[in-house]
Image (tube, rainbow, N blue to C red; front, side):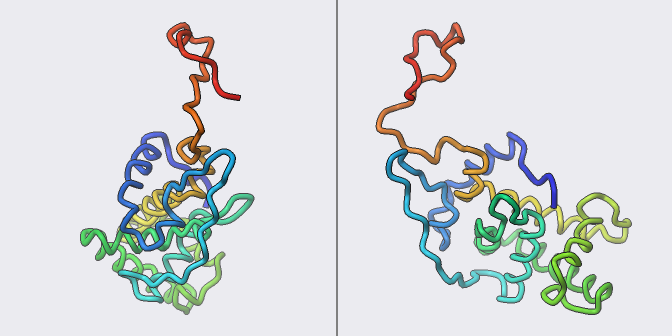
Length: 202
């Protein structure tokens, strides 16, 4: 779904959150892995993820939903960034969000059955987008308040997971992904307050 990029405040919050990544089983895929400018870090090896909190069916649904929110286009999507794994890790670590996630999935699954006659896992990407769109853009009736609350939670964790992954940080051109042989100098040479600093490394 369009326009899911975080604002500056969210970016700072997400980067700070990455400090907790050491306990995450998918750490190599999600962590802000630095890359030396001359020796890029090897890509993480493929792995088979075993959910910590969600059932396999719930985890598959989270993967589908997050990929709908941040789909693959010219850039990698939520699935490529391991966002479902991140959300599973966060839910396993925080009891306060366990019930909202599980209830929200049940709510959305019931809505899928009512609208399309099939469970969430059995409907198409287009149909998933049809379910989420009114929840995302305020078009849902007041009776769907639970669904809107779930989408807000899911979107927040999707954006959080994506933009604290290496893929997401590359999308943001986050400089912390690089290690330098010496400290880069200030790039604002024309700023009077910065004139005492050396020119940038080129």
